[in-house]
Length: 212
Image (cartoon, rainbow, N blue to C red; front, side):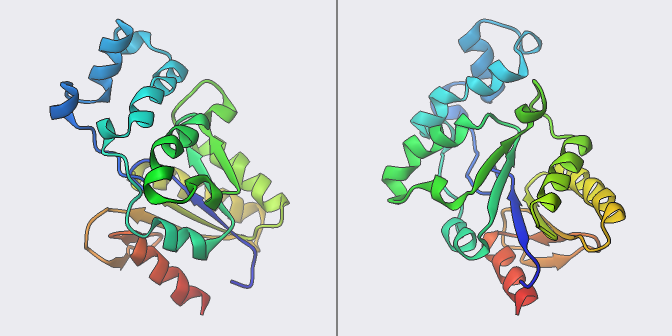
C-alpha cells in the first residue's frame, strides 16, 4: 500500500450481525417495534428519532442478535485508517460497544479513527452521492489517494462508485476499490467495477494480494 489508503466501512450487515429476532421481540421487524414503542406511524417518525430509538435494542444486543461478523478484528487490524460511514447516528457505535465489548473482550471502537454519519450532512438517514463526493474530497485533502469502500447494500455501493468516479475526474491520482459484502461463502468475484466478497476474510485476502 504505497499510496495512503482510507478504508470506509458501512456498519450494520457489513461489520456487525444485524438480524432482527421477530420470535423473541414479538415484532416482525424493527419498524414494527419502533412504531409500537413510540405510538406513532412510521411516516410520523423523523429520521433522527428513528435512529435514536436504536439505543435500547442495541444496548440489549439480543433483539438484533448483535455480534461482530467473522473477520472483524483480523481485517480491521490489517487495513488501518478505518472510518465508518453510517446512516445511523454516531452514538450507535457506543451502544454496540456497551453490549459487545464485554463479550468480545476488546473495544470495537479502537479500530476506527472516525465515525462519519449521514447526519453530518443534515437530518437524514439516507446516503447520497452528494454526501460521498464531499466526503471523498475531504479525504483527498487529508492526503488519501486510495479509498476502499465496503457495504452489504448494493445501492450504497452504486452511490459510492458514482461519487468516486467524480473524485477521479477531479484528481487523476485518485483511485478506489469497492466491495459488496454478501455474508455467505461465495468467495471473491471480480464483477468489473467492483468486487463481490462472501465475507470479511475474502476481502482481507483480496487486499493483501493487491498490496503485495
